[in-house]
Length: 200
Image (tube, rainbow, N blue to C red; front, side, top):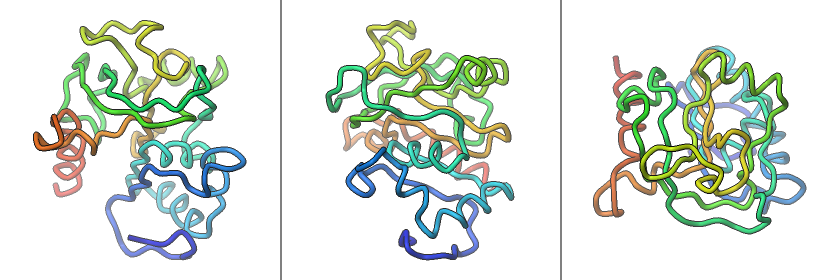
């Protein structure tokens, strides 16, 4: 674990920005953390090809520091959402999703107040055209509908990757359903995917 006030990182194959409420989510979620001293090194490592995973607040930080496009805004209902949601795997060809199949439906928890993903029309078109939408909110049968969207995200986006497909940000918490003792293991393949890919 590396404290946000540090300025250096050890030699690593993967950087994980976890969920939480950095700086109490004051100002704008992730905006202050994006300027923490260690983030300069995170950005440099990511641009050099080191894989980065941002979950929930980590996703917010990745957009605020420019490693991923778009922004995470207040939920459309202006309420904190904490429940399981269904996700459609849109891109199964990344280091993070290779143990899933395209179109596979996952049950994963969300817990956020600022998970409403927004990007302008041009950015959204690029994300779609480049196959960079990793996960979308859906119904239990995989249908992407407005009712299945817990926060108002554009196009039901729950997670995206960068152009090099080495940075993944997602609002749901795969770690919270990664073992049967936690009530399910739909999130486990994401971590198995990363471990297998980086160990190769």
